[in-house]
Length: 479
Image 1 (cartoon, rainbow, N blue to C red):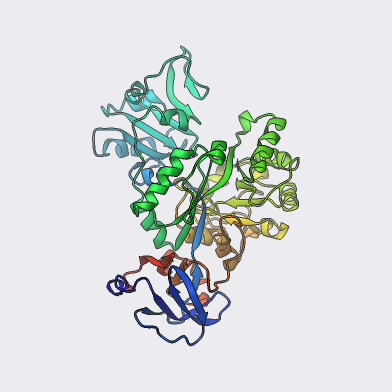
Image 2 (image 1 turned 45 degrees about the vertical axis):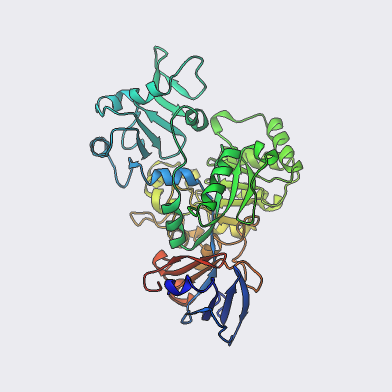
């Protein structure tokens, strides 16, 4: 079929496709748009006819929160935490077996694997190469001495560089991504393989949620699109400076909310935070708060309550949220963008380590929707799986990797779980858009009707993914 597509000018007729409503229709794609959507369409000359066989046709899915370059880099990094690496011996082995002799980058380090990991521990491995490992939280990097030497450290060192009793760096760097990025030789990772993987899951739209995203990041991502590396459409969060920068905005890439990273141990003054929100709003730019603790989300909601919220003000993660927060978010019209796949990926550790009072409010689902809060999901890749279908299953069954149930009363229906990846860039958490003529042809054709898909929310059920009328993924049976 793909050979025919190359000669069709991207004109398609999908026959007998099932909409989420259950209606069976034909759908014509031309000029990158849905041109017609009705029953019994006649084939036009030169278009490729695809028999949908009564299978489900969805609008393209959105990953409402990820970190593109970090995810692409992680795909070429050493896994340093569970489930791949579970103790110090396995970590030693994983690092020793890593190929090459230049910078070694590891991801997913967990305290359960190597408590207090620092340069001294890494140095005793005698790897004879610069090593930097990222904690699973994304908030900490650990360097060996050879890597620290490459940083050319000099006084005064910024807050976040951990020092030992003699005032020397331990190799642990907290929340210093931007500072480290200026000192480590790098070039943006190629996004081709990542874009292909996302397309395989039916994802056509992405929100890059990096707090340090600036005009250089925006231009690099735009260039990746123009080179054909990145096939999805993109919204970019980031620094306040983006609002006044000259950016290559287009129908494929746009400016997203200002990202505000709250840390419970170092919260700003409330008045300063309110002023920052107001400044963003005056530029018609929403804000997006990183909140992973109850204190952080209460602080964010308190600040938002002193402003006039605008469309797409949002809380990222909303990891721990009590009923008061839910009520306030509903009243203010603030969206929650969470990561239900963490229930599966990290749930067993949560059950062991999270305090019981927080566990009751951890990665809630149904309570958000019942409270009237717009509730969406994103992968938070590279810190979570990019597979949205895994997140949907976790939102429905609330099961950990070991099969334990985590707050089953928060389970969503399959349709509600699917809706987490619907809406649009400015309305995350809205329902799946109803397909209609004139819309961009951003579509996902599944291998079965909804009656089967809702019982098996799995990525291997994706047959074709279209973005702007171009096929960006085709399952081997459909190629």
